[in-house]
Length: 237
Image (cartoon, rainbow, N blue to C red; front, side, top):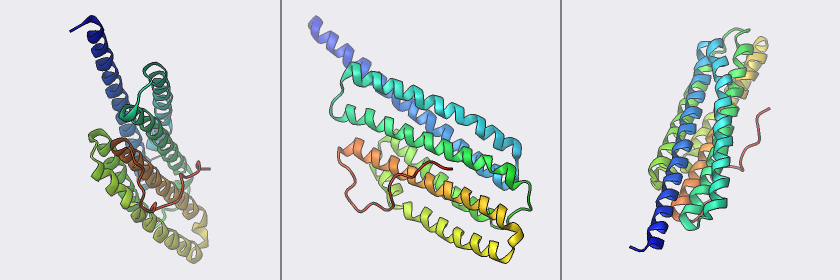
């Protein structure tokens, strides 16, 4: 092998290792975001203020991962000038880290409502929120596994099931409105629980976004079937 050929092989190997490191950091960030969602909902259900505060603090770690990933990706794009699948992998990692950063923000938003919820009587529909949260957590876990393994069928499955989260939210919305009408003293607490449910619904949207990015990385094509939901959600209040 010529010296030039050996040098090229070394560059290709180094770039592959950088891409693997990038994917690993995205996966780690995803695991952290998952744990924040789980703990934020547990804090609501168990009225655990200390756990809620821990979730709020952990959001700083997610933000740090997001900034570090952005720097990594910009460096790779500038120095390696990737093409085809490698370019798609870099762009997808950037988009997925952004979605995960938003999931962390939404989990933090849920955790911050625990303090207010704990000042009032428990809301009877908290368990319904917990069931919705389990569905969202399952979709996040499934889509992050699909990202790690490149299993496009699992990613598309999450994309196709996004309406399940929407149905849960719509049902819970109707229940909470009825609950508030029947017991005006619980309007404040129920309204906060409604915001919790809305944040969970937005997390489901982000899982769908990630599924679309995985499909694009693997196939080079966007999902062309009718999108099962609206555009990327706005930031929580």
